[in-house]
Image 1 (cartoon, rainbow, N blue to C red):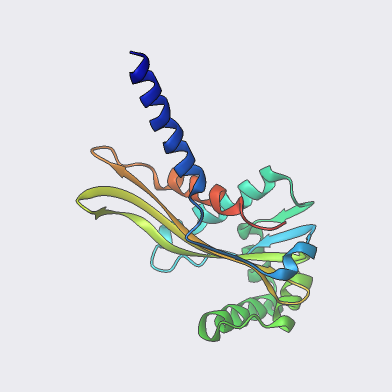
Image 2 (cartoon, rainbow, N blue to C red):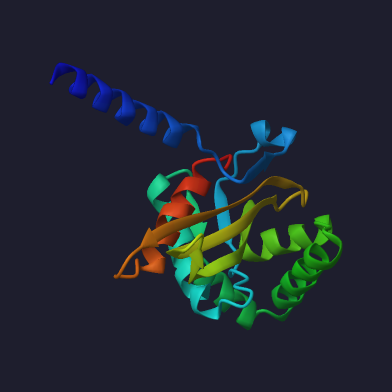
Length: 196
Protein backbone atom coordinates (compact mmCIF):
# COMPACT_ATOMS: atom_id res chain seq x y z
CA UNK A 1 0.00 0.00 0.00
CA UNK A 2 2.82 2.38 0.91
CA UNK A 3 4.54 1.80 -2.48
CA UNK A 4 1.27 2.50 -4.25
CA UNK A 5 0.85 5.84 -2.43
CA UNK A 6 4.44 6.84 -3.23
CA UNK A 7 4.03 5.98 -6.93
CA UNK A 8 0.74 7.85 -7.10
CA UNK A 9 2.30 10.86 -5.38
CA UNK A 10 5.16 10.87 -7.90
CA UNK A 11 2.78 10.69 -10.85
CA UNK A 12 0.72 13.60 -9.50
CA UNK A 13 3.90 15.60 -8.82
CA UNK A 14 5.24 15.00 -12.35
CA UNK A 15 1.88 15.92 -13.87
CA UNK A 16 1.80 19.26 -12.05
CA UNK A 17 5.44 19.98 -12.89
CA UNK A 18 4.74 19.39 -16.58
CA UNK A 19 1.69 21.66 -16.40
CA UNK A 20 3.74 24.43 -14.80
CA UNK A 21 6.48 24.18 -17.45
CA UNK A 22 4.11 24.61 -20.34
CA UNK A 23 4.35 28.13 -21.67
CA UNK A 24 2.66 29.87 -24.52
CA UNK A 25 3.19 28.74 -28.11
CA UNK A 26 5.05 32.02 -28.54
CA UNK A 27 5.52 35.09 -26.42
CA UNK A 28 7.92 37.86 -27.29
CA UNK A 29 8.63 40.86 -25.06
CA UNK A 30 10.38 43.97 -26.37
CA UNK A 31 13.46 45.15 -24.42
CA UNK A 32 11.60 48.44 -23.85
CA UNK A 33 8.91 46.59 -21.86
CA UNK A 34 10.87 46.89 -18.60
CA UNK A 35 10.28 50.66 -18.64
CA UNK A 36 6.73 50.45 -19.99
CA UNK A 37 4.03 50.91 -17.35
CA UNK A 38 0.86 52.32 -18.93
CA UNK A 39 -1.91 53.67 -16.72
CA UNK A 40 -4.74 53.36 -19.23
CA UNK A 41 -5.16 50.56 -21.75
CA UNK A 42 -7.61 50.18 -24.61
CA UNK A 43 -8.81 46.90 -26.05
CA UNK A 44 -9.35 47.39 -29.78
CA UNK A 45 -12.31 45.42 -31.14
CA UNK A 46 -11.10 41.89 -31.83
CA UNK A 47 -10.43 40.69 -35.37
CA UNK A 48 -12.45 37.46 -35.39
CA UNK A 49 -11.30 36.28 -38.82
CA UNK A 50 -13.82 33.72 -39.99
CA UNK A 51 -15.15 33.18 -36.44
CA UNK A 52 -17.60 36.09 -36.22
CA UNK A 53 -19.47 34.56 -33.27
CA UNK A 54 -16.34 35.02 -31.14
CA UNK A 55 -16.07 38.80 -31.67
CA UNK A 56 -18.00 40.27 -28.72
CA UNK A 57 -17.26 37.33 -26.43
CA UNK A 58 -13.48 37.71 -26.69
CA UNK A 59 -13.68 41.51 -26.29
CA UNK A 60 -15.66 41.08 -23.09
CA UNK A 61 -13.41 38.35 -21.67
CA UNK A 62 -10.21 40.34 -22.24
CA UNK A 63 -11.56 43.60 -20.79
CA UNK A 64 -13.06 41.75 -17.80
CA UNK A 65 -9.82 39.93 -17.06
CA UNK A 66 -7.76 43.14 -17.29
CA UNK A 67 -10.14 44.96 -14.93
CA UNK A 68 -9.93 42.12 -12.38
CA UNK A 69 -6.13 42.25 -12.40
CA UNK A 70 -6.12 45.91 -11.30
CA UNK A 71 -2.96 46.70 -13.26
CA UNK A 72 -4.40 49.84 -14.86
CA UNK A 73 -6.26 52.90 -13.63
CA UNK A 74 -8.64 52.48 -16.59
CA UNK A 75 -9.45 49.72 -19.08
CA UNK A 76 -11.32 50.92 -22.16
CA UNK A 77 -13.20 47.86 -23.40
CA UNK A 78 -13.65 46.88 -27.04
CA UNK A 79 -17.34 47.86 -26.95
CA UNK A 80 -16.47 51.38 -25.75
CA UNK A 81 -13.77 51.80 -28.40
CA UNK A 82 -16.21 50.50 -31.00
CA UNK A 83 -18.64 53.29 -30.01
CA UNK A 84 -15.82 55.84 -30.15
CA UNK A 85 -14.86 54.62 -33.62
CA UNK A 86 -18.42 54.87 -34.90
CA UNK A 87 -18.79 58.41 -33.54
CA UNK A 88 -15.38 59.79 -34.58
CA UNK A 89 -14.33 59.77 -38.24
CA UNK A 90 -10.67 60.58 -37.45
CA UNK A 91 -10.42 57.66 -35.02
CA UNK A 92 -12.21 55.32 -37.44
CA UNK A 93 -9.75 56.20 -40.19
CA UNK A 94 -6.69 55.95 -37.92
CA UNK A 95 -7.70 52.51 -36.61
CA UNK A 96 -8.52 51.25 -40.12
CA UNK A 97 -5.20 52.46 -41.54
CA UNK A 98 -3.25 51.17 -38.56
CA UNK A 99 -4.80 47.69 -38.72
CA UNK A 100 -4.33 47.55 -42.50
CA UNK A 101 -0.61 48.39 -42.21
CA UNK A 102 -0.21 45.78 -39.48
CA UNK A 103 -1.94 43.13 -41.59
CA UNK A 104 -0.28 43.88 -44.92
CA UNK A 105 3.29 44.93 -44.10
CA UNK A 106 3.51 44.14 -40.35
CA UNK A 107 4.29 47.78 -39.62
CA UNK A 108 3.17 49.58 -36.46
CA UNK A 109 2.82 53.18 -37.66
CA UNK A 110 3.91 55.51 -34.80
CA UNK A 111 1.82 58.49 -35.93
CA UNK A 112 -1.35 56.40 -36.28
CA UNK A 113 -0.69 54.66 -32.94
CA UNK A 114 -0.25 58.06 -31.30
CA UNK A 115 -3.47 59.34 -32.88
CA UNK A 116 -5.37 56.27 -31.61
CA UNK A 117 -3.92 56.74 -28.12
CA UNK A 118 -4.75 60.45 -27.96
CA UNK A 119 -8.26 60.10 -29.36
CA UNK A 120 -9.18 57.05 -27.24
CA UNK A 121 -7.29 58.54 -24.23
CA UNK A 122 -5.15 55.46 -23.61
CA UNK A 123 -1.42 54.91 -23.08
CA UNK A 124 -1.44 51.49 -24.74
CA UNK A 125 -3.80 49.34 -26.74
CA UNK A 126 -4.20 45.62 -27.22
CA UNK A 127 -4.92 44.09 -30.63
CA UNK A 128 -6.38 40.57 -30.65
CA UNK A 129 -6.88 38.11 -33.51
CA UNK A 130 -8.94 34.91 -33.29
CA UNK A 131 -7.07 31.95 -34.81
CA UNK A 132 -9.48 29.19 -33.73
CA UNK A 133 -12.99 29.08 -32.31
CA UNK A 134 -14.46 25.71 -33.13
CA UNK A 135 -15.16 22.10 -32.40
CA UNK A 136 -13.16 19.59 -34.43
CA UNK A 137 -11.35 16.28 -34.36
CA UNK A 138 -7.67 15.88 -33.54
CA UNK A 139 -6.04 12.45 -33.46
CA UNK A 140 -9.46 10.76 -33.34
CA UNK A 141 -10.57 12.84 -30.36
CA UNK A 142 -13.34 15.40 -30.35
CA UNK A 143 -12.00 18.74 -29.15
CA UNK A 144 -13.08 22.29 -28.40
CA UNK A 145 -10.36 24.65 -29.61
CA UNK A 146 -9.81 28.37 -29.09
CA UNK A 147 -6.71 30.13 -30.39
CA UNK A 148 -5.69 33.78 -30.07
CA UNK A 149 -2.85 36.09 -31.06
CA UNK A 150 -2.30 39.38 -29.19
CA UNK A 151 -0.15 42.48 -29.62
CA UNK A 152 0.34 45.16 -26.96
CA UNK A 153 1.22 48.53 -28.51
CA UNK A 154 2.73 51.58 -26.81
CA UNK A 155 0.44 54.32 -28.12
CA UNK A 156 3.04 57.08 -27.72
CA UNK A 157 5.72 55.41 -29.86
CA UNK A 158 3.87 52.74 -31.82
CA UNK A 159 6.32 50.10 -30.62
CA UNK A 160 5.00 46.60 -30.11
CA UNK A 161 5.87 45.91 -26.50
CA UNK A 162 4.60 42.32 -26.41
CA UNK A 163 3.16 39.81 -28.81
CA UNK A 164 1.97 36.33 -28.13
CA UNK A 165 -0.04 33.49 -29.56
CA UNK A 166 -1.47 30.36 -28.05
CA UNK A 167 -4.41 27.99 -28.22
CA UNK A 168 -6.32 26.01 -25.65
CA UNK A 169 -7.77 22.60 -26.48
CA UNK A 170 -10.24 20.63 -24.41
CA UNK A 171 -11.24 17.12 -25.46
CA UNK A 172 -14.67 15.65 -24.79
CA UNK A 173 -16.71 12.52 -25.38
CA UNK A 174 -20.38 13.50 -25.38
CA UNK A 175 -21.00 16.97 -23.99
CA UNK A 176 -19.29 19.81 -25.81
CA UNK A 177 -17.37 22.19 -23.55
CA UNK A 178 -18.47 25.81 -23.76
CA UNK A 179 -16.03 27.69 -26.03
CA UNK A 180 -16.42 30.76 -23.81
CA UNK A 181 -15.04 28.78 -20.83
CA UNK A 182 -12.12 27.56 -22.95
CA UNK A 183 -11.49 31.17 -24.07
CA UNK A 184 -11.51 32.44 -20.47
CA UNK A 185 -8.77 29.99 -19.52
CA UNK A 186 -6.76 30.93 -22.61
CA UNK A 187 -7.03 34.70 -22.05
CA UNK A 188 -6.02 34.33 -18.41
CA UNK A 189 -3.00 32.24 -19.37
CA UNK A 190 -1.91 34.69 -22.07
CA UNK A 191 -2.39 37.84 -20.01
CA UNK A 192 -0.32 36.29 -17.21
CA UNK A 193 2.68 36.84 -19.51
CA UNK A 194 1.80 40.34 -20.70
CA UNK A 195 4.02 43.13 -19.35
CA UNK A 196 2.25 45.86 -17.42
